[in-house]
Image 1 (cartoon, rainbow, N blue to C red):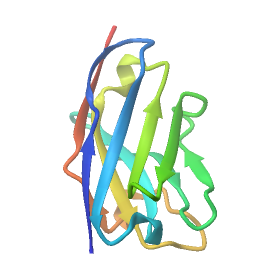
Image 2 (cartoon, one colour):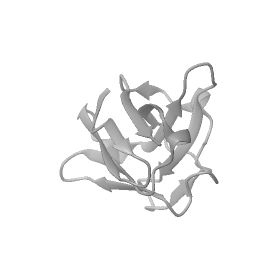
Image 3 (cartoon, rainbow, N blue to C red):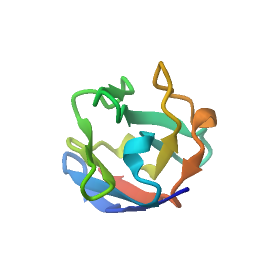
Length: 125
C-alpha cells in the first residue's frame, strides 16, 4: 500500500533549522492525509503537523506554529517538515504517518494507518 521512510534528522543548535523528508513508495501519498508526529523519551507520541492532500490545507500543534512548515511534493511522492527556530524541547524522534483522508483531518496518532521508522532530532542548548 504505502511505505514511508524518514530522513534529515540530526543534531542542531538551538535557533537552527532542519528539514525532514518522508519518502513514500507503493501507493502515491496524494491518496492520503500526511502527518508528522514526535515522541520524546518517557512521553506520549504527540501531533506536530498535518497536510490535507485533497485541499492542501495544513494543521499545526500550537507548540510549533510559526516555526514549522509542512509541505508536499506529489511529483516526488514526498512530504517535508521544515523546522526553524528549533528549541531543546523539540528534541524527539520524528515520525511520518499516513491516514485515509477524512472530512476532518485527524491529529490523533491512533487514526493513522501507516508509519515510518522515525528519525532522531536533537536540539542542543
